Image (cartoon, rainbow, N blue to C red; front, side, top):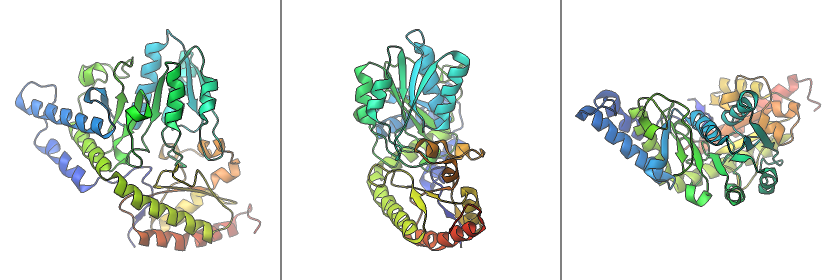
Length: 388
């Protein structure tokens, strides 16, 4: 059978509408947006229209959007841009132990090389950050709090509004990584009460190498990339016009069809979770079970086996999946997210993430439910960890 793609949290295919929107700016309207002649101004107009579409999708203003090369650059720009601009006020950052590596690695770099101090908050067994833990972590020298909107591995949707209210009481900047949340849940920056928000194109059926950072008007931010006046002097470099146009189209479609897509994905997700739990023993659902879980996320730990063996067997039977964050897939270490929610190294190594997209079908889910128990049983029979 054709490949069943269940790794949409890692990346998504470009849909035809997005590709069609991009094509003219790859072929005919290739001008540099900074050029004064008509070919360049056509490109500049396209970038301006795209910026307005991205802003509208999250309730922001056009001038509050900075286009980046993706979610990782957006995260780096948010963290480094704020703390370097405000380091005369303090050098303390608050984040959580389950953030994306783009956040955690940046914070570690700031600690090691620039003298910043970072508080890494614990989470509960379902991956939730306790807003009161945020309150307790705030200090006189805290200049930034960064808590993700939804976790990329276990799908936990964090209580961002409650956290925001606490952070705003102290007049501290608040950033959220919304890369996995966009297209899965409604996002309004004003309702959430945040100052900076990261987005990525290739998670919502747009092109790779494209993302954005929302920066609330008035937020102090030092540019991460210098060398040009693009993006209102906040991010140098000639704009990726085709990528920006494609990203904006993907954002527009994700917003317009959000309710329809969420209902469809939630139905498939619940069917998959119920089917796995019914047919396989010694399994642990990672993350919450209810509306506080992303509608496309399924993550299980299978006791007594390693996740890599599951992935290889699924691949041989035509199913693409993952064991966690694509940005950590080259590491032999167990998922930092699963360790943070209380799993042992052994259990964390046996994880499987199945992330759904609007191109999946009920028949594909039935196929996975049908063949996965046999895969698990076969691997367990060969495992010295399995005791029957």
